[in-house]
Length: 370
Image 1 (cartoon, rainbow, N blue to C red):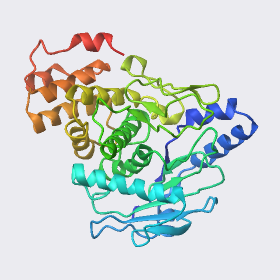
Image 2: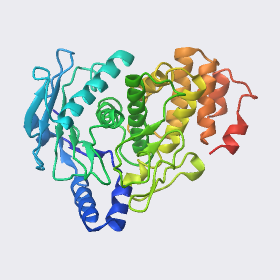
Image 3: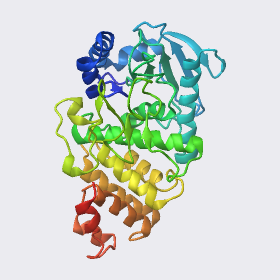
Image 4: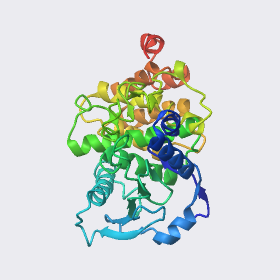
């Protein structure tokens, strides 16, 4: 077991919570401040794991545990649902159980991966964490879901892309260990968004053209003006609300933000690679997990290192596309084009080795699109 202190990866970014703490009503400000204070403190993975027990690695079959915290800030809580006890009347319990199952099934069916660690790790979740706790997070060992307040936030267990997004932080920890700050942190968030949206599309049988490309649709309550947490199709347009603020995500490197909070803008600048994946999926057509998703997965799980940034990741996806689908082929060209459209141009040496030639620089996209 690793003796480390693990940063909490939350679904509601701190810039939203900060805006609520400044612009919400008295109760909203109070809850936002409490959530910020709680999730800002790193957790000891060793302490949490000691409470839950060691992760189950063998055999490589689906194993899920759901706990109920009883609205206390104590983990893991009371065990209420397992594979051997697969029914529960509590909707949050059922959704947490089904959501982690969808993540396991997607990773196994599409990428032949055995759980988030690729060794059959048991997927543990705790629901009803705290009183009106306004977030969901991966703490280095398990998923934790608050209930929200029913006004700004609905159940965090409901959107399967949110459930998948948070689980994939665990996959990233196991494979690349991307640092959770600056561009590596934004890539960390981007990989979670990609697998999150692909899990939703796979579960619903949606092609790239039919998907809404919204992360967290249904998380916001009836009082919020917004469609979800992030839009991969149109970063910066997901919400515009007087209490939560306006979606700050950029879609192009021209608007990259060196943000002092949010660990250097990890939830903000992820809009740039998110938009590149959206372009990739739309241009390749069909089901996004079949080609683009497999390229992103292989790159994320075998080519990254803790300090990797946007440029390195973009180049790596183009190289992997050539290895998987042919050097100089249509797939590789589509992916290069997608990165160019968000302002990330790849070196000429890489283009020549991929067989692009001088006329394949896609300068129109790289200079005009945002």
